[in-house]
Image (cartoon, rainbow, N blue to C red):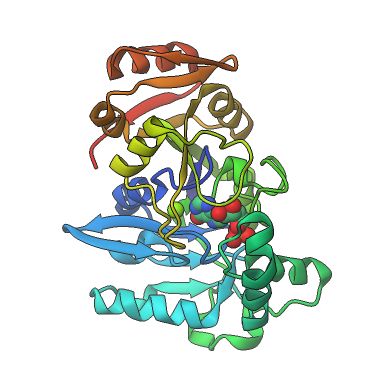
Length: 319
Ligand code: IMP
Ligand code: MG
């Protein structure tokens, strides 16, 4: 029986540091699950000072916990096995990873079309994600149960305490995000129920954001490109884990963050990378559509605490 489900999700445009948070708490759970997206995601975390980068496999594997790729995910078979063998070489047990028989398979054709057309149109990651979900919706897709060896297929059971690791984020969500500059899946906590449990099982909803906003891919909202934003991008090492592309930087939008927290139902908020603003000595955010400046990080934190009351905020500023 499932005791409780906790869900981590990105409250911004991805790249908030979800991987770091989830790897830190994973050991408290019986299962770690992905509920959306595919290898368009990139999660970076450290295990015993060793850097680990994953795209489609949940971080549970690094903590010896069964790791499930859910029915709402899409999987490129080649990339999956390459990632699995990379993780095996790092000393993790590949037998812990299971794919839902209902997950859809990304084909070379999906990736080719994505790279040739959609990556230029809306800045996709070229991983074939949108085309795979399109085939799923058209009922012409290929499901994992028809092509994946049996030993990799999940028996669709969960038990005890379950951690769900979101990929992408609120503003990249196909329903709530800034369409058409979004991904093709549901990224909000409600989408974790696609794994096959009742919404009533959800306990904590953990939002992750940064003290400044970033965006990989095309988005007209990210219209700042000056010395200050470039400095923050450089200090914050804002380059895509999956694509290597430079991310655009804009000051934290507290209006959008509050909206995301409310709609998603978050009760905990991790705020990352305040140390980067300290290094840059720039402390700015948008509130009520106005750009405000603060004299230091403490003043900025105090302002956020005063305005974002519905969540418990964890300032998580180490690297
Ligand atoms: P797609 O998911 O590859 O179709 O890309 C659609 C949009 O979502 C593009 O703007 C991508 O840059 C963005 N995107 C997709 N996955 C991620 C992610 O994991 N982090 C940040 N941006 C992402
Ligand atoms: Mg990422």
